[in-house]
Length: 222
Image (cartoon, rainbow, N blue to C red; front, top):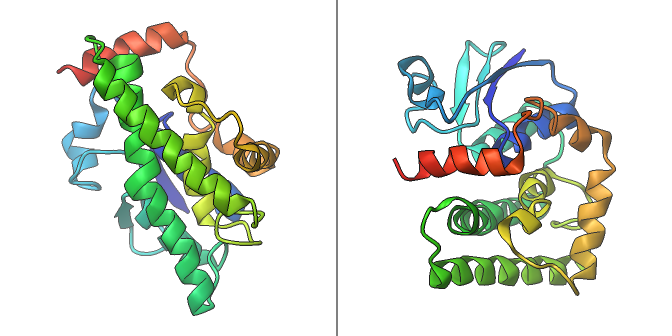
């Protein structure tokens, strides 16, 4: 049994999608980020960095894993799924996983902050992160022009890691017009049952987008 600590964010959805894809039994604990549940001592004992997601593997001496990329690798190696064993193919998957971890996630996250949440609109900051998001999407589009998935013909944890971020490009103000291969990939993954189920963990909030943005704005400026 996997115990998942999560919230309704792209990073959180990576793990719920992976758990669904891998068919692992899990229970989830939804953390209220606005209430700073992630900073409470009981969660910091699992993840000293105070960020979601994190897991505890109850079948492996309550082994705790934090950082979404590390969790995906751990689960893939635990199950033997969604990560090739061939050295070169595995490296390709890990390269695209790190591309998301070091590029797509941070750039889209900052675009969200400055475009949606920061109380003062700073055009230069908004433009910087949206432009970099677009550039990264163009890199992906080029890769997907000749490959069904990011690391080749096989669906892997690299796709799971990246899709939750790309699917919210409009929220980040990043245009993907003209990136037909990227759009094809986004649409294809949206049809996967595990992706659909993973986006429901935790269940969507009843708050409107505007109300969510207001609450997160308060958190960002603390």
